[in-house]
Length: 230
Image (tube, rainbow, N blue to C red):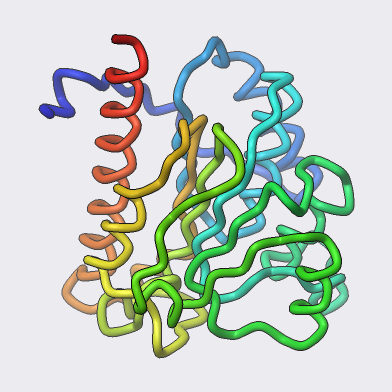
């Protein structure tokens, strides 16, 4: 499929904010202004932007959809360094504020959870797929039809994406991630990619991997839409 023939894009610019609350408010304004069934891609920033993006799409679209969260870390801390809306607390906030049910969350590529986070995931029915499970041919089946996808670039092994703030060895290869994306049995309502840090990148390989993720999600979404309308 020629993506240039299927997709047209509009750059809505940067969302500027002096505080997290302002970020959420400005995100709401942007999504509300432009939402009419459009397909949104949000580029971070750290993983806290997923809270703002998911919340905005969920409330403005008035649709329910699941969350597929690609990350080395589950981001289920009650707070991190005194901040409840830290990038390390994103998924927990979404669950506790009832923006998405735990049973409608699948986390993929996890390999650095704490005991506390594992217990929270079990208590709320969050499905956690480790990097090892992906390596041993886990099939990407999820219990919902629509999903928002969130990619922390550190889901990839540092060999493929060194340009992140919290690298964690033992991650996915780019090929493994591409195959997971292709095998997802969901309609994607929007997605984000976060935590890419050019200052830590080497020869731009993390940026190239990120661009590959974007292309694969756009390709997957276009294929799903074109076949569902036939």
